[in-house]
Amino acid sequence: MAKRKGGKSLFSLSTLLASFFGAAMIAGAFAYFNYKFSKYKFIDFKEWSFYEKSDIFTPKKKKYIVVFYSSRNKGSMEKLSHLNLNNPIIAIDYYNNIHPNSKNTTFIRSGTDTSLKFIQRFNIYEVPSIFFIKRIKETLYKQDSMIRKLDNLDELSQHIKTL
Image 1 (cartoon, rainbow, N blue to C red):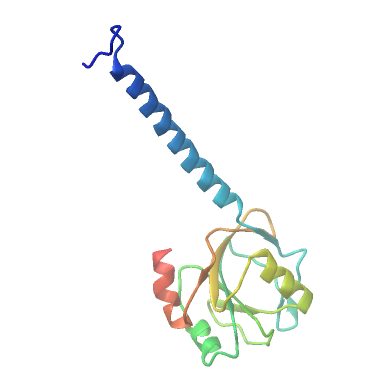
Image 2 (image 1 turned 180 degrees about the vertical axis):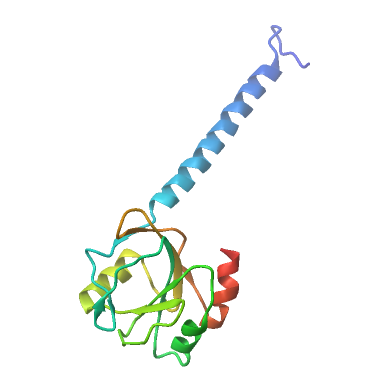
């Protein structure tokens, strides 16, 4: 063991500093991930009205995949209608067109005010974008993943498997 003048050990000082920095790094990483998770947003379907055709949409499942897409992209509704994933899909059209639901996909729309609030709340900048939500209480859902932008809807089934 190396000793300094006066008989003090360098080992104890370096061990102490290494332990301190190691603990600080772990605490910093924990705080960062806790902060990132707390940034996830909530949506209460009682407060915001979304519509399936003319009926108000009321979620019934524990988890959903939310896809914000543009019906002006060729074939997007057909691709969403034929997807068969583990979780049901809520598809929200940027242009608020009415589309028939399929077995695994619920197409919803809303008024302009609700659409703008939704886009702002979840910071959606591009379409198609996807994220997961999970039920916290009856109609209150929390974002359960980061929002991801897809280049096209063909990627969706492969992309979901990696989340």
